[in-house]
Image (cartoon, rainbow, N blue to C red; front, top):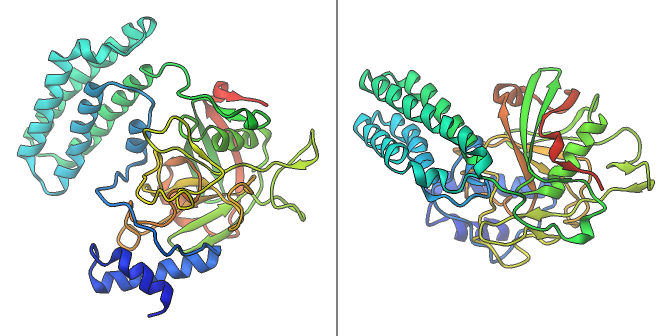
Length: 372
């Protein structure tokens, strides 16, 4: 066992069996070599159950403060966990708790909704209450597929309700980045490839500079016709390298390479961390607001030795949950996640180097893009 693997063995050993551990460590060292990532000698990996549903991560990362809508969301999210074990009694308990919030805590749900949006919020709560009763009947029939589908529908309504609670932008972006596009909210991008369609939600609440850069380039048509130029099985699919000698976007107004800083928001912080990795700051246990937990997380590619050297190239993170467990990887805090694939997982699974982006278009949220 080489020295790097010995270090990683010390990190992982309390949690993984030796057989699985050896596979994990071999792959970590392999990937680190491909990306020229430094292997830290003192990192401690995050622990705990990781949320792997991209839509759930996006709901939890909204900048709102309403414990009751979070309880409602948590009860509906938990149904998926209980379904795996066919624990119908626990699902009934989740639904009972959700009904209680919707009926007896309605005023609390509405408390953080601005007055001009309350009518819309009340309508969503009515739909949620009726839908929860419908789901109880589905659960009584022990129909797993219908239960999952209805749960997803209800969580979509919860997400709409939570979005109504968002007021303004949660922080002031440092002035030094005023020369860069910024996404002050969320946007949705539809990407057509030669193997099918992808839909991506870009989260400006957590990564406004990185998200703004990507949405701006999509708006310009920069990615149309570009190839996926790099692929590593189970892990990385990268694109955004323009034709010619340049490796990023050259701003036509300045004729300069547009460099984008590393940007990682940790819940509880007033601002994202800019320019330094969490590892460099000694924040090994801090989990980003939008981590690499979900299949299809999209992040800014950058030179291994320059956290602020990214530009137009991005990558989708593709992982095998059995080999690289979410919440235990070495990517979080080192690269800027700025969104998630929400539709087209089966397409992303098939894409590889040499495949092509036919077009990319912003289909929602373009009004949230602030130009320099």
